[in-house]
Length: 422
Image 1 (tube, rainbow, N blue to C red):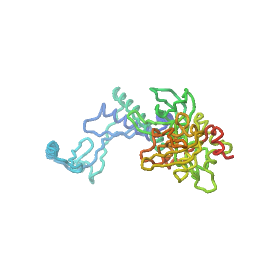
Image 2: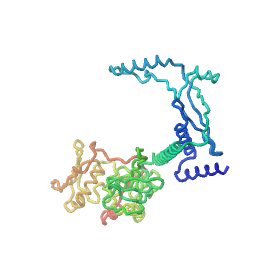
Image 3: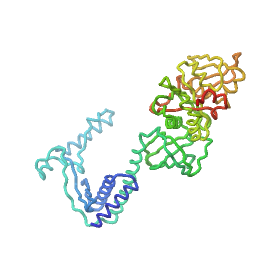
Image 4: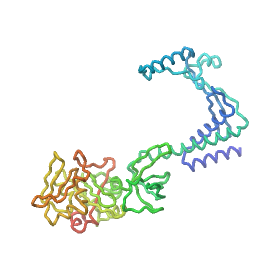
């Protein structure tokens, strides 16, 4: 009895360490014992299946076969050869017309089955008890060990995949481990995630042991196990952070209509309220900017502009170019462009450092925005701002309930007066 207790305890220990079910471990042991039996004692046409009982550390070995119709093997082989010749000649054979060969390892003809077990029907499973050896040989034991290691690894990988699949778009806490071939490896609890270079923020330093928030971008099963891709540069990270910090977004009273981001530098987000008495911009900024400042700190000081959505396209573009003041907006829907006229003293604000402000406004509005002086002379174009080909507003995934953005340090005074509502 002591031996069986040790086995049960060992199984439970493996389950706890690998975070897998007891059934998975039992199935692994049964598969390993079956492989070991076939190695030293099995015959060619035996379909060996083992039933293991951890309570008393005993096992039963069976040859399991499914009952099928009687088959003329010679006629079947001839028909298979003819069908193969037709395929070689270019004839297309439907999948349902494919001739299925009789498999003596897993199948038994009904006449033979009825001779040993009366009342047998097609589709029944015949289990023939085999002799259990007193001990397995060295090679068989080695085979069993390899099977157990492989199956446990597969079970662990599948468990991790099932845990994270479907969590795309979710923000998780991560601990930086190390850099490997320009990709960052992160500990996210039950698994190690990868942050490729394109999902990293250029200005951030990822020191080993640093705790950061990341958004899960994709979860895929690969030959080497589950691959979990996370991001710090994704728009969805900003969206989820706002959903966490702004109750009105989390409840759906305020929604994010569009977002444009240059990770680590600046983000613009358009928000709208579904309730007449709720100010969408003020809700996102928070009392004295507390809500947005929390998000800015999490993003390492990234500047955030919150823009009020407007169904009027011209008015929305005016909002998008803030903090600059606009004289007029002219939109050419055919060419998906807009010309925005501003006073000369507003040019630098409208264009932004390195053209960043007009570039983000262009992404947000889905148009290529050109900045012009009062006399109409073009000063800056956003033709390279990666506006969508169809010219539509770039929407945020509806399932993600959030995305928002705030003022340049709560925007060097000009922006703050329009955005921050105490």
